[in-house]
Image (cartoon, rainbow, N blue to C red; front, top):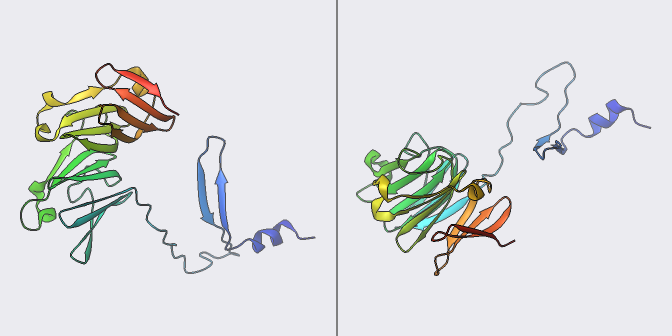
Length: 219
């Protein structure tokens, strides 16, 4: 029969997972050392990037993830972060429409204008929008574009604004009823030809009617 010490030593190098009662979990590789640290070269294991969304527009491919947005163009890769113009490094969603790219980030909405030579290198091409511009909450999780209107799902409500009126606060429509706020983060958003707005949340799928304010569960 193995001792506890021998059992632990036999698990060195194994992938482990721990989870608490609230659902918080962590994955790690078990290591061991005897009176010395580190027990190996202490090199960090590189994990694959968790890509949240992808959009292609005007020959550019944009890949959103937790460390910014990676862009592939003419055979080259570049990484763009808050230091380059994003509202925050974590990007949840991305949409490309009519020479512009829209990013849903943890710090607000970012709009990139793809006009001019080397458009991503132009500081003036990056535009940021937060609660002072019209958002109900600065944490933006999802985006959809329908008939010239940008729909925005946040951590606390929904916003809609015409694409040609982003810089006009009075043009923003905000939906923050208690029913919508109770949904928490709007993880996904989309619209139908009839004007219904579909909301993907941690509590399931909902249909929202902007004209009446009616919110109905679908799952």
